[in-house]
Length: 122
Picture: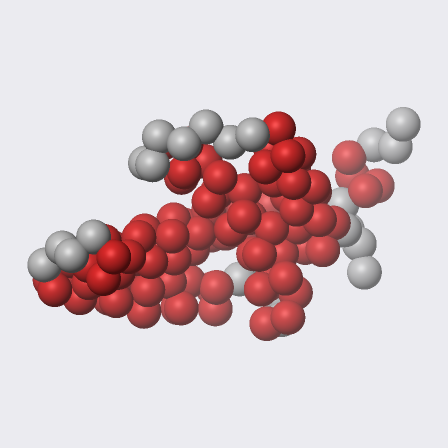
């Protein structure tokens, strides 16, 4: 089995992996949370202030990926996998909907895809 150092890019280190993955997680929570508030406003007939706060959070979400140290396409491709996995967890925690085995398997597949896209050597 190869060492972790040989799988990851030469200029990567644990700190950069943790910080970039952290940015992906913050972006996912911001997008899902902002979208959830807009959903609450429009679908659940909550007050417009809920929708407005959701819109502000979605605007902030748009800024977060610009902090990543890679190009737009790679960042957003990898982010898509993180987003899917975090959304499944969001559904479990916030909506109290237990994911089925196919959602869990799919979540792991897209998360693996995100890691391959963003963290493998070029």
